[in-house]
Length: 279
Image (cartoon, rainbow, N blue to C red):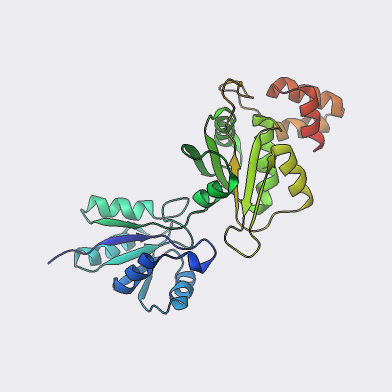
């Protein structure tokens, strides 16, 4: 008996018209669709008038659920795996399913399509021949600080995802490491009705989104450190700028004293430190 194939199918991140002709052909030929969220995938299939068996496979699925799905591929059925939006495995479940398929000798066939990271890069206007993709950063701690420092010293364009309610905090942390004049872009609600791509300095973006709270899914693109320019933060140094400001304010320090300490710790001018503090 000929075994089937596992198709890894990219889905629209917003506009349903971005679904590919090939993706539609695959959905019409497979025996079953494995979905991160069967309700959302059912709506997509309904839009294209495709009726297929749906099974749930998500980030918290038990290993035996994945194995049962792959048993069906071994038995000769073709299976499509789809996440809620975008390309499976790119800040979405999918890598573990593909890895298990490879371990069992099952052919894994990619069906390329939308991804917020590539859409944001295309619209932001930064070089993308090489780029660093960080997905969602940790919310706090040394792991977050290390990645922020990586962005500060990076000579490639950097991209990360963020929730709308934490976007300003991320921009502030980036400004603390990269300097407030580093060029960046915020892309949100890509391909949706309220799509917005706003480019400026980190300082300008902080000011704008403090006044206009972002909504929807957010992708942040940060320009590379210019050749020959020193990294804002010395290698290995971890600085929690917000924590430092809060601690000094709690201790009764004046804005001038806080700006002076930020300038010393972050390696930026006192003028930029004060703008970061008050922006």
